[in-house]
Length: 108
Image 1 (tube, one colour):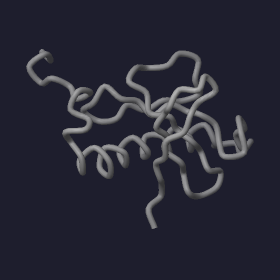
Image 2 (tube, rainbow, N blue to C red; image 1 turned 30 degrees about the horizontal axis):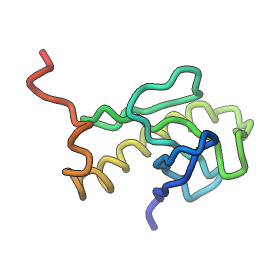
Image 3 (cartoon, rainbow, N blue to C red; image 1 turned 60 degrees about the vertical axis):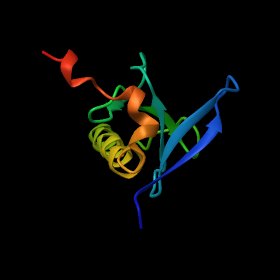
Image 4 (tube, helix red, strand yellow; image 1 turned 90 degrees about the vertical axis):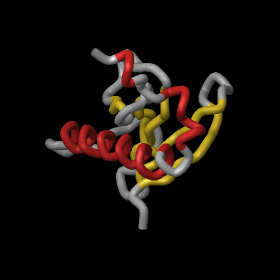
């Protein structure tokens, strides 16, 4: 079974967003963003793209388990979400995400 699923839904402002959901507990939710977001618990950059997976809570709302090592666990999960999104979504439909791809000529 795949560790994550993607879905679209409206945010609190009524705007359509793209999300990633962790299938296992604690069911973290990440929102795909085209820019870094300030004042968030964690965000991970999608490799090679101007896209970030930004912490958007859990299925149960804005809560985090209080395990001692949970901060490190969240960092690992969101890094894995970003890599998974790149592999499972972007690489299967690269044209759909081309406008967010880094321009190799602009680096350097």
